Image 1 (cartoon, rainbow, N blue to C red):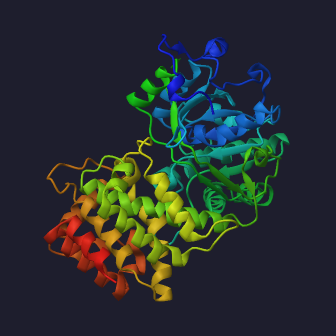
Image 2 (image 1 turned 30 degrees about the vertical axis):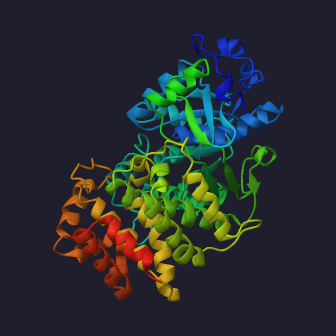
Image 3 (image 1 turned 60 degrees about the horizontal axis):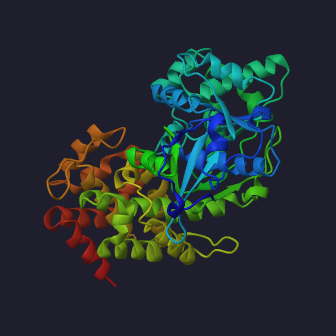
Amino acid sequence: MGNTMNNKLNSTPLKLSNDTLSALPANIVRPDYDRATLTPGIIHIGLGNFHRAHQSWYLHRLMQDGLAQDWAIIGAGMRPYDEEQRLKMAAQDYLTTLIELDPVLGTSAEVVGSMIDYVPVVEGNRPLIERMAGDDIRIVALTITEGGYYIDPASKGFDATHPDIIHDAANPETPQTAFGAMIAALKLRRERGIRPFTGLCCDNLQGNGDILRQTLISLARLSDPEMAEWIEENCSFPNSMVDCIVPATGPNEIAMAREFGIDDAVPVTHESFRQWVIEDDFCAGRPDWDKAGAVFTDAVHDYEAMKIRILNAGHQVLANAGELLGLATIADCMAHPLLAEFLSKVEHQEIAPHVKPVPDMQPDTYIDLIATRFANPAILDTTRRVAFDGSSRHTGFVLPILRDALASGTSVEGLSLVEALWARMCAGTREDGSEIEANDPYWDTLVVTAQRTKQEPLAWLEMRQTYGDLADQPRFASAFAKWLTLIWDQGVEATMKQYCEQT
């Protein structure tokens, strides 16, 4: 990337914009392509930090090589927060400072310029619908969090009962969801004789393209079955696996950008590792992202299973215990010897047996890689962020492994303890008595249920929307009740120690 921390200047930071790019410190990498000549090809909905450190960067790298000049990104969002983000980005010509946090090489900065516009966020989403209906848009990509696809947690099917879905089915011209807006735009494209676009999910969901397809077609079917059939026959939804640890931006990150001489209202910090594995299934063309390091393959499922089961589930192994112990960051969790040992044992003994190798990577090797990444002290990835929305993350990342372990007869002791730690965290207090603030869309319900488990540990498994028939599995239910009872009686560390000492 660009210059390291040791070369930073002490002069007054320059407000990031097209006009100031040439005046930035000389050894900060910045766009060397003419941004004024870029034309759009992608709309990305959910323009948070991850997208700007990942997909946007891959495209920027192609542009640096004179490629993909007609694939620039237009940002979009659905929430009031997104309008705030749009205004901040517009004020700096949609440029982003990426700050790479490498534990060996140090900290470096690069300015990315692959985004050129941002659709105004208004009620009814007509500007977004009209922009997605433009014939220059060939890909609509999304990063809207794992829990945003209206999936029934137990059946994994489409949740047609959600109020947002009911609204969009009844009001297809003024949708509230990204999916309703995409359907409305595709309807306009069909009416105007414009080819369909590719829907590209960039969220951490196994089979994310299939899930996007399910949500879009199921919603369309509620109001316009003929449109649903057209989407199914003409659009494409490639599965993809995305990976890069990208912390949230706060005052510290803004200060880091200023130390590099850049006044950026929304900089992004990230680790020095990126991975993007994609099915090559694009109905309207695509950039050559493989020339910037992405991988096109038909074996996306194996890559994503390794990443979701080892990294994302591993995050949940750490975060709930870390929150209970008052550990602020994932690096702090890894610096806690017992918690690091707990992670290693669960990963190697209970997760790795249910992960297939991929080219050039065995599961045990990947476990060692993610342990190094988690331990990077420069990545201030908060325990709270990683523990957020456990309702989606445990359902998506941990419970599928648990099901496979039960089916194959392998140990579920550690995975059961992970679920018990989540239950204890959702009681709302740390072991030192301090309060854990609401950290899940269903927090109030979770707290009430979790507090019942002091006397009735199995009350947690009565949440059928989360656990389904897992609650009826004696090996899991017995281990879960044992560990949760021990946590309440003796505390988190004593319980993890007992697990780690088991042979």
